[in-house]
Amino acid sequence: MRKLLSVAIASALAFSTAVHAATPADTLVVAIPLDGIISFDPAESFETVSTSSLIDVYQGLVASDRDDPRKLVPELATTWQPGSSEHSLVFTLKPGVKFASGNAFTADDVIYSFTRAVKLNKTPAFILGELGWTAENIDAQFTRISDDKLELRWVSPIGSDLALRLLSAPVASIVDSKLAQQHASNNDYGNGWLRTHSAGSAAFSIKNYVPQQALVLEQNPQAQPAAKLKRVILKGVADAGSRRLLLEQGDADVAYELGADQFDAIKNKPGIKVANFPSSLIYYLGFNTQDKQQPALGNPALWQAARWLVDYDSLSNQLLKGQYQVHQAFLPQGFDGALTDKPFKLDVAKAKQILQQGGIKPGTRFSLTIVNQPPYTDVAQALQASFAKADIDIQIQPVAESELWGKMRSRNFQSIFIYWGADYVDPNTNASTFAYNVPGGPKTLAWRTGWEIPKLSAQTRAAAAESDVQKRQALYGELQKEIQQNSPYVVTLQGQKLVGLRDNVQGAKQGIGTSMLWYDQVSK
Image (cartoon, rainbow, N blue to C red):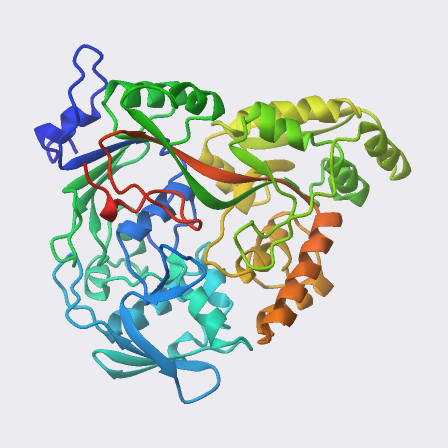
């Protein structure tokens, strides 16, 4: 990689403490942990940094409006209209678009992108599965009308509004079919290559990626309008204190995941500003109900007691200094119909009573898997202390983020404290993972916790199919209340996304459904 990097980029990545020069004017250097990255293929990526990077590399047919994410706007489509059936739409595509490779964008790329995502059946494929698409039926869901027009059909009994919302998710990004096929191996639709490369049409493309060390995004010369920066370098820095130091010294322009104490310490530092963006990330404690070593994890009494063993206000206001707000429902604030009531608080006596009545013995022990970064380490220690007051022993297991996702997706954990982020701006995005688990279905969060819920799953599908806005909102309200009161998840917090910036960084903005800046808007 070093041979490929310019002197300017190499100097921006250096850790030298002897000389602190400003980063190049055409380059944005971002200090951030990179240990959560598994893949940059939009058909596979489902982790924070990689998936958030996709918005600067790929485009979809439609996207959430950046100023009002509840609205949808055209992106690679210019218009859409009802198709030949109740469950179909005809899309007219944006003319003159070229991928970063120079290949022209056509309807073939749309069909290829959706088909490969469904047939690869990687982690985010369940989102497109909401349309009723399967590997067996996907080939029949498209009619190519011309280079710039196609009809798209779906099987599920959902309306066109939800269908469009699903198509705004990162997994629905449009891939350069010619380039992907050039790099295909063993019928993998180019997945092996796209895990570390890109084939998109957005403002940037992936120039280089070195796992855990650096991701270099380079301006796409085909993009219209062009990005204001020539490149963006995401520098992998594991330690929050080191990220803060790089920002203070001017060796980084942007710093993420500093933690409450670090952000509090830099907010009045000269040359630095702290930006605060809304976030759809909700943080929850989840129990593996199928764990064979600790059957108490499948006992609803433990779930109920846990709700009264979290010191929500202390977490939010003292430990995390108000940078996260108390939130106790699976829909984040900012989404239509999100519950805002907070029925639970720390009550050790109540928790002990529930545990005793439920047959949970004092001294019950289980492990808590967390990411080895703030705020997880601090929150885990606080949970350990508050649960100990009820004679519940939590053993903290900090791991790299990528390892946590692997454990979670294989049910190889006892309990977990982590976030869930919205994939698109519609209540179904969280309902379909917190409250949906059917035999042979997608591996949702309910599946990962081993929670068998046929009735709730049917209610979730009914809510998705409801076309009346008020009735649909009421259905999601009922689902939230049920999950809030009786489930193996204890929703605790909703995040705000704080970002440390040098004061010469302009145009820094990100949306409720993303966890990183839109780099195409940034300048220095």
